[in-house]
Amino acid sequence: MLNFIFLQANLNLSEGTKVVSETIQQEGLMKGLYSTVVKGGPIMFPIMLLLLVAIFIFFERYIAIYRAGRVDSRLMTNLRECILDGKIESAFSLCRMKNTA
Image (cartoon, rainbow, N blue to C red; front, side, top):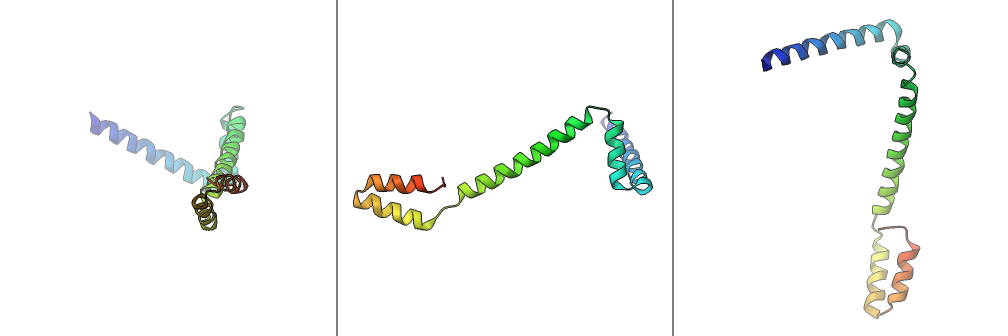
């Protein structure tokens, strides 16, 4: 039974790839994508808009996390010196000035 399901899935995938490759060869990539979106109906346009928003949010968060995750060695050295000297308030002010974790 499981073999039959796998064979059927393989047939469906091979037929789908044939249709996609024929469409791309006949119409070109952008025309093929546009025709697919239009065939999907009016709900495809909000989905495409949400896809673009999701991609923007992903990269914005990636950049923000990357910047916050960097460790400044000079900051750590200065913090260590302030703490060992007992200047806790100056250590807090150093931390507030830098935008790192």
